[in-house]
Length: 95
Image (cartoon, rainbow, N blue to C red; front, side, top):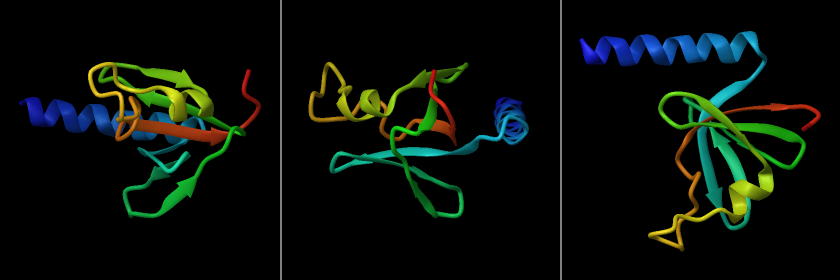
């Protein structure tokens, strides 16, 4: 039952992303660059013109490009905190 619920929630997030004009993928942070890895293994290089939202398991949180690059894990300071998070992005005016 848990697998079905997880799949349904993922599908809902995909539909929401589509309706809100976001692109859904996995956040990759390497060599001071941030990109989004898509399901088909294409990669979109991001910059500060993108709205970036990371998923914490229950909801999305907006972060800046600079936060993605400069926020590290407290117990593993060499690891970027947001790397490998599910994320959704879109180009737009960041408020």
